[in-house]
Each structure stands twice: as structure tokens, then as C-alpha cells.
Image 1 (cartoon, rainbow, N blue to C red):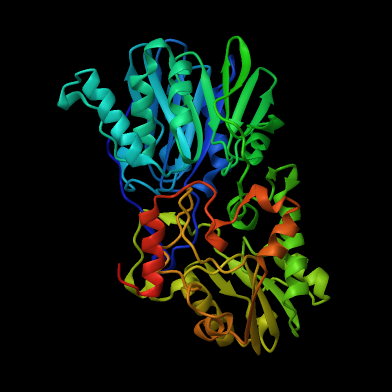
Image 2 (cartoon, rainbow, N blue to C red):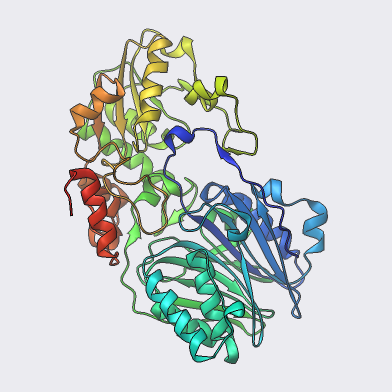
Length: 491
């Protein structure tokens, strides 16, 4: 059931959009269980990975039903809707847009009819060779003499992959996947399904996380282990880079469509993943505490109190306080209900900016020399407003400490960073950024210190947003244009 009454939503802090992951994906095969509700709760646990749209696709073995809409998971689904989605296998998706507009037609799962039935697909990541894939699809359509009005046009990389798989599905979805997946480049974690099976696939670099879990009567795949926890599934392992997993009445089967070359996203450890999630057998909270300890050693401060920027700065602030001996305190309160909304704030409220999300506890910070720990600086507008707000609340000094290196390059693998021209770090020294945000001092963790804190090998991590070294080739024109935006050179 497709409901084409999508509505656009708005960023409350649109003047400084922070880093956002592309999507969260979830899949479950569990006869006898209410799979739509399991998927709903799984997506609820993955809501931080995408807040523009949500969707669930369910099959009872004979037909696929899809329900999706713009908004949060809790806004899109209600009890009657979930009760109408009956079956024993399902996939779900929550989305931020990195390719394709934030409109209902790009909400996922996508759906296509195939020669053997139906195909529903959800995607986390971003492909880098879409022009090549579009040419392949056009060639395929032409060779099969598909009338123009019936050709599978695509408005996002996800719909493009769905169209390609649908055209190759004459022999079944498994064969189609093994034909299409080896041709894809970039970051991708797919969950997809036909009427009888669910599939999961992860790109050969494993840039985005994808895990496998076990239920008493079935299997689960999800972007993060936190989604397994919320439905009572046992974490089994990560889906390997370059692996295709098939789950149906015959059980679970695995095969490789490409050799693994691990390059997991370093920013998952800094910000994207939930702190209660496991990646590479390390709890993200513990990693972030260790990052804070390293940050304190590399960028000490003479201060009275360490406070985090909620929520993402909390673990690193704890680690900073432990290593520095400076007391940890709660100096900022976050409004947990501010995020995405259909209601555009008035101009008066918008001018208050960061106060929509954070408010200082004046009794805690007045007269104090503060260390404020945050995960990253993108444009700098949020930190500038935060420093000003803390000074107005009586802070004697504000020392900003960042638990990632300067973000200098855009991400082509599924994080919605600003363009390089909009980032504050390129072309500025740390002292210049410090003056720009109005802090008394500013310190970033080093790239070496960050990598060491994760406990993961340097060569098995994607660090492109920090050092510009992209592990999967990016069209040269895109990277070159980013360089020109900063240097002002003419081509």
C-alpha cells in the first residue's frame, strides 16, 4: 500500500546543519512473529540515522506490501497500520537524503515489479559510479527494446539499483543481486526482499555498519546492534564486507560477491553510531570515553569544570574529565524533543537559534572556567552561538575541545556534510577558527590520536573527511571542484 501524501519537514537549526548519516536499515525473517512491529521497533532504535522518512515492506509469502511516508517512525506508523502489514518477513528503512530530494517518491523501501514477482529494497550509503550505472541501465533497456514510457527512470542511487536488479531478476532475485552488486562502487548496505526471502549485502569496504542477529524463530539484519537489543535478538556477527546473505525457509546462506577490503567509517566512532552499539566488537561508548582521555592529554586546559554538548559529547567529556582531573558536570540541558518537525518555527524563535536545542544551567556554570567537549565543528555556527550563550550565562572562560580532527573534506559515502566551501576548517588555522567562534581556546584531537583510541588499524578505516584520502575512487571532477572551492583557483 503506497500513500502518496508526503509532506516536507524542516530543520530547526537549518543555519548550521550538522553531519547526518544517510539511513538506517532493518530486516527480519521470523514466521509466527509480528514482523511489522519488530521492524517498527528496530527502526525506532535506528531513528538517529535518518529522520526525513520511514517505511516498512512486508510479505506473507505471496505478495509484498509497502507503507512509507515522510516523517519520524512514530509519525509514519500507528497501530492500525502496523496491524494491516501481515506476513513473516519484512524490511524497514529510515532516511536522510544524500542523493535525491527529500520527497515522498524517494522514501524507502523502493519497490519494483519483476518477471518473477516483486522487489523491495532499502539502502544505507552512497554510490559513486551512478553515471556508469545509469548508462548500464539505459543499455539494458535499449537491448530489450523497452518502450520509453516503461523505462525505469531513477531519481536516487537507491532507485537506480532497484531498477537494475529488477531488470535482471528473470532467474530470481539472488541471481540478479550477484549480477548487479559486483558492479557497484561506493558505500552500500542493502536489505532487500522478494515474496519469500530477505537479503542483506555490504560493500567490499564495509564503510557503513551492518550486523546479523538471531531470534528464537528467525533472523534479523540491522545497521546497528542497538536495533537487535530493542527486539530481544542475539548479536551473531557483522555482515562481512563483500558478503551477500540470504535468509528464507531453508535458513541462512552466505556467499561473496567481492573480496573484502575493510575501510570502516571513522566518523561512526565519533558521532554517527549510538553509544550502546557494538562495531568491530567494541562498544561505541567505551571508544568515545577513550577518545576523551586522549583529547585531554593532547589538548589540556586550565579550567574548573568539564561539560559536554549533549548528547554526542557526553562520553568524550567523561573521558576528558577522568584524564585531566577536572570535575565533570552537566552545564547544558538538551530538549530531547527537538529534531525534525513539520512545524516551521517563527522568525522570533529561529533567531534564538541554539536555544531551541540547548539551555545552560546558570547556577552550574556562572563564574566557572569551562571545558566544553563536542564531537565536531562543521560550519562553526553552532559553536559560535554556544560560546556566546555560555558567556551570557556567566561563564568566566570557555575552552572548546573537539573529539575529532578538523573536518576538511566532504563525504561521498553517505554522510550529509556541508560542501567544502561551507566547512569552516579548510584554509583556516586552529587559532583562526578559535577566534571565529569566540572561544578562549580551541583544541582538536589529532587524527593519529583518534585512530589509536578506536583500537582499529589505521589502514582499515575510512578517514576521508579528515585527510581527503578516499578509499573508493570518487569521480575526479567532484574532488577537483572541492579543491577549487577552497583555493579560488580557476580551471
